[in-house]
Image (tube, rainbow, N blue to C red; front, side, top):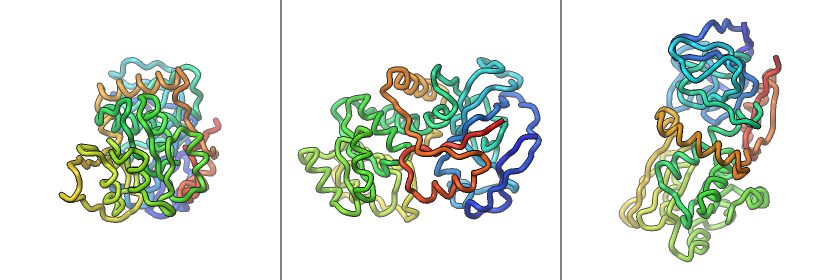
Length: 330
């Protein structure tokens, strides 16, 4: 038996329960992992609340995409993993099929990466989703390179902070947005070239001024909704607007022909994590950044597994800067 977070109906954080659940043995293509740390993601809050991109199919339901731990058992047909190896689990499956909010979890081996030397469990649960998300859109798909400018929304999130570091590593210029100026100094210290408080400043004017009127080659947007109309105005001709989140909760219009030619597309991490070749390139890119010190994952706060309700409430407060991690004591 393993302590496992489940919920029996959609709703607020209070629906989460810590229950003893039989884990069993991994099937073909699966691993059983002793979970030491769990990285929280906005998708889990949305899944629990019933407004994620996929609905809960069956109750009681599990949660959790991202964790770090140690391999305990190896299923048939799995190569490259041994019992005792330190690993990280990355989002590459449906939460209707697997969940890592638990002391022990069975997960598909295709969603597991070897943890680089020197990366502890907390960092191992905080690094992959943010950096692979940013790398996948901007570098793998977008082709961002030195001299490009990228506008990053919701910049104090774990993905936003990772995207700042990814942009700086390839020589691009990260211009970031946040709601108010309260987090401005933190974001400048994190490597942002410019910080724009969207409730206090004109985003379009600030970006065009910062780029000498040229505009940005990329926008990486976690908010969506009506704000994309202004974000489209800051793009350089033939620029790309990636939408990877829906924080606004509002319908998202499509910018029409009054704008310069642009590409607007949705993007999900699964485009990278479910493609073996793309995932291996992402793994190499992130591991290299960790090894050289170019990437410094930011952990805002840790909670114990018993505090999972409080951890979800904290995420919904939107006051964090960086990743929220839940630790598991065995």
